[in-house]
Length: 98
Length: 353
Image 1 (cartoon, rainbow over the protein chains, first blue to last red):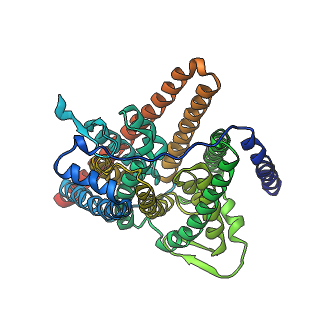
Image 2: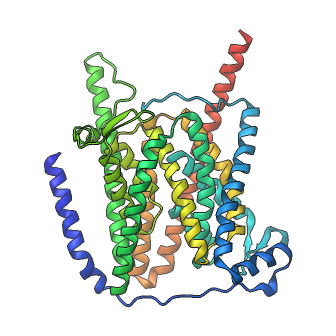
């Protein structure tokens, strides 16, 4: 075990030392990209969403972070109700490796 | 058949929405079963559906946050989540991830890091696969030895027991993780999570693929608790990732919500399946998934090394990943249905008696 760990750390050490040289040899860095939503194709809710994206990435991000857990919980609870209705025990399990 | 396509308001492309739901179900099942986000499976799937790559990662992380929330809730009710361990590990993971991400930025200023990252990822996956299958072989050897002696191996016994060596390091403060059944130095999970977070930051992945085996082999969690606790971390890091990627304008929420419809069902099915499959069943399936992931990376590397055959290798890599997602999720769903049928039949028999 000790022998194996010392070998492992030697490999990690070597990789850390060689990494910058490998990267420098790999090629030029990429340029930044700016993306704008094309609102001409959209209407209604999708139009509002695309407008929000173009106007403020901050509000867009806040709304996404709020919406994702809410939608997740709604779908999760629905799936829970279906499985409980089928008769699956959703409260206990046996802990065993084999 | 226009109704089968939906316009993505940000990227402006039409996407086959049933494909997004099917992909969501597949990765939901695998994520809930193994305790990982599964970005390595989603990205090629989104690519096949014609999704612009600029939005693939952000959209994947956004749906992953919702999916892992559902799976964590379910694992939590089963008693598979050690919240104390999860919270301690989040600190290490975030710091490690930021250090890793900053390191990549620094390396990017020197040049392209893609090739190096792929090599590093491959070495890591080979290491994880080796660990899993060595563990399985050792456990089987233990069973054979016990059988020869006329004894039975404890049902929580494991093959590789490196965690026992780490638990002997008694640097204060010592912490008791009740759900995981571990008593060790608080520095052990902090160090392990920092290391796995650092690796995830360098590789640009969520980290579930690394953290799940680290929780088992280095910290000593039972498989089911490792899966649940890892999902708790994926949930937190997923929400953080969804916030940062969306702030950078790289998330297509409409696609994430459509995927979440499938993923919520899949994640529940995958989580419930862990009830009917023992720890080593999960470990072996996880090892096979890691081998599949490594093979797909080899094919991607071959596509870059031999541009003439690039399209062939690239398509083969995508086919391999999607085939793996299909076969594994089907296997997990079949096991879940079989287990549920048995459980319901036993319940009915008890009620009748």
